[in-house]
Structure formats: C-alpha cells, structure tokens
Image 1 (cartoon, rainbow, N blue to C red):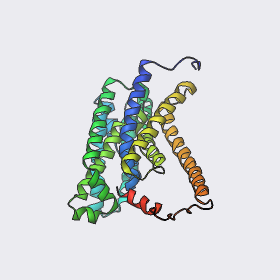
Image 2 (spheres, one colour):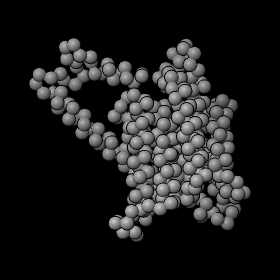
Image 3 (cartoon, rainbow, N blue to C red):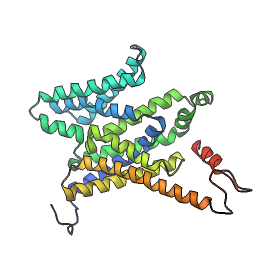
Image 4 (cartoon, one colour):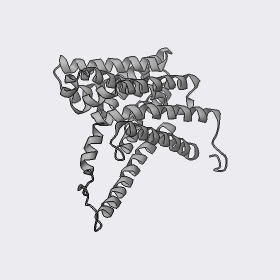
Length: 305
C-alpha cells in the first residue's frame, strides 16, 4: 500500500478519474429522469441485458461497447415484444429477461479460456484500464446526452407528470418515452467500462437519489446529481488506491454512502427548519405569514417547472 504522504497521481489514475467524472455526468443527467419516472428496474435490466453482446464481442475480439449496445437495444425490443405479443406485464417481461440475458452471456464467456477475468470485468468493470479512446467515447456520449436532455426537456417533464396533457399540447409523450429509454441504454453502455454492468445502476441511481431531497427543480437536481456522482468517483478511487479495493465497487459503494448521508443530513435540516418555524411569532410549517406565499404551494409549483 502506498504511503499517505505520496499523492496518488499517475497517468492511469488521471484517466480513470476523467472517465469516472464523465460517467458521473452522464449518469447524473439520465439518473434524474430514471428516479422521476420510476425506471430503476429497467436500468438494472439493461445492465444485465448487455452481457450477451459483451460476451460475444469479448470472445470474438470485437469492440465490447458495440456488442453491449446491440444487446441492450435487442433487450429493449424484446421487452416491448413480450408486453404486446406475450401479453405480459412490464415488470414480468423485464424479470424474465433479467435472468435470461445474463445466463446467455455467462454461457458464451464460459467457452473462452479467459472466463474468470472477462466475467469479472463484465460484471464489475475496470475503470483503472480506461484509455484515451474510452474517454473520447464517454465525452461524445456526454454531449449527446446533454443535448437530448436539453432539447426535449419540456416533453420529458410533461410525459412524466401527465401524458394526456402532453399529448394535447402536441409534445409527443411516446417519443419522449422512447428517447428516455434510449438515454438509459446509452448511459449504461457508456459507463460499463467504469463500474461494470452490475454496479452501473448504483452510479445511475444513488447520485440522483442523493440530490432529490434538496431541490424540486429538475435542472438543479441534475446538477446536484452530477456533483454527488463526481464526489463518489473521487472518493471511490481514493479508497481503492489506499485500501487496495476494487475501484468500480468502491465507486458504487461511495455513491450509495453519499445517498445515505444526504438523506440523514436533509432530515437534520428539516428538523432544524421546523424548530425555527415553530418559534413564537413565526409561521408554523405549511402555513404562510400574511402577505407571504404558502411554501407548500410554492413547492408544488416548482415541481412542474
């Protein structure tokens, strides 16, 4: 273990930090919508669904991101097919493929001579092996993600809160759904190298969950989620360096730890605010002083902005 006095700075660690921060940016933006729309199970399923494509690409020596993307898209299509033709519920369709797709991936990889190593990388990632080409892919993915999220912000908001109103306003909620599914797939595939298919959902969900108590405005929540995700990457890599732990798992665990700390801190903040509001001469929580807007009404108004 390197001494604490020595700064953990090296080329591969800087690349890992850059790649992890880009992954945090992507997952922060997409993860906010995943939490709002309740798509956590779908995100986890996509992480599992990319395994057969990654396995085939690994065995044949093809780019793993291409294989993972094709497999993830195929899984999204199969979920829709099982719903329409098989007349299964959404969660049942995902549940069947949730188990079936990883099984196919493990079967494929088990025929290669590097089963143990490849399976570990597939499931838990290898952020310390990120290269310049991986960073370029993450940077392009980040730009595409931000562009789509900004361009379709209104349809995303309308579809999330009331599809009928979105349809009446001509905002095409079905297109918004398809684009959100595409963003989740893109985020999972792009972040695969950093934290692996099993742990990517931790980076996708935990920063967004950590950010959600502090603001109701979606753009601000995205920014806060990116900040929490970046902090998780820095903390996870630092712990991995000094404690000799797996980098991807350390990042995912750090993200979940920050989410727990955020919930606890917000609970203390609410108690403090309640005590201040309960003082004599001040309005109690949920009530407005004369000439002042009701804070609950303002909160509801913010949620729709």
